[in-house]
Structure formats: C-alpha cells, structure tokens
Image (cartoon, rainbow, N blue to C red; front, side):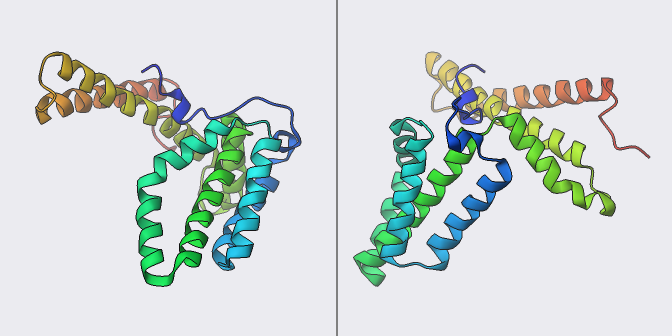
Length: 207
C-alpha cells in the first residue's frame, strides 16, 4: 500500500543536536514536558513549555508543516475542548489545556522525527529487558511492535484502496463493498506474515 509509510516512518534525517541526543534522554525530556504541562497547569508555565518545544522542533531542522499537520489532525477535538473549558473555566484554562496538548504532541513528534524506527525498537527492547527475569521476551516484544508498525499503514492503505475502488463502481454507499475486501485482505496479510514467521521459527513461543 504505497503512500502510507509516512504514518509510521516519520523519521526526518539530520545531524542536529536533537538528532544526536540519546533516545533515553529524549524520553526523559518528553516525560518532563508532559509533567510540566499537566502537573503545573498555569498559563505562564504551559506557554513557556510550548515555546521551548516549538524552538526544539526548528532546532532539529524539522519543517513547519509537521506542526501544522499534527495540529490540523486534532483541530476538531481542540476546538471542542477549548470551547468547553472556556465555558466552564474561562479563556486562561482553555488556552492552558489546549497548549498542553499541542506541546505534548509536538514533543512526541520531535522524538519520532529525530529517531529512526530501528533505534526506537531497540530502545523499547532495552526498556523491556529488565522484565526478562519475570518471563518477558524483549526480542519478541520488539518484533511484535515492528509488525504492528508495518501493519497499520497496510490496513489504512487497504481502506483507501477499497474506498476508491467502490467509488469507481458507484458503490461508495455500500458498506459491504467497502469493508469486506478490507477484512479479506487484512486476514490474508496476517496469514502470510504468520507463515513467514513460522518458516523462520518465530511463530510460537518455545516450550
């Protein structure tokens, strides 16, 4: 399914200091952004955090359209949240809540945009490794996440392709025509993936 890799493959190559920052430190900074925004919900603190995050975004050499794309996707929810908070608690609280959400999303985007998928998976595996003593399998966990990251664009692409095909046949209002092929294609994709894993001895946990 071409055209949907950007949904997961969000890495933006670069050599900025943000790109060179270790993943564990980026994770800590992301957590600090969330704590600062939601733990100290004041107009001044949230505005300052948002300004710093936007500054880091551009320091990493990331294009402004990435901020706009993230905000545009959330715009309907942000408008509803802002309207409710304004009605209940006034404009200050509305801005604080919306700015906190935007700052956290931009910070998350910075992490994924300056870290390769391989590095993210390695980091997740390393984070799970201490749980190995309790029976967790870090490598299997990393493989599971990798499969998930590959499957999401496939399923979204399948919906888009089937929708376009249904529209071309004049069946855009036919729920069955728009969903059944997606289900069949997704099941076939899952079975093919399972067969490939089984052929490499990765299908089932060891006894």
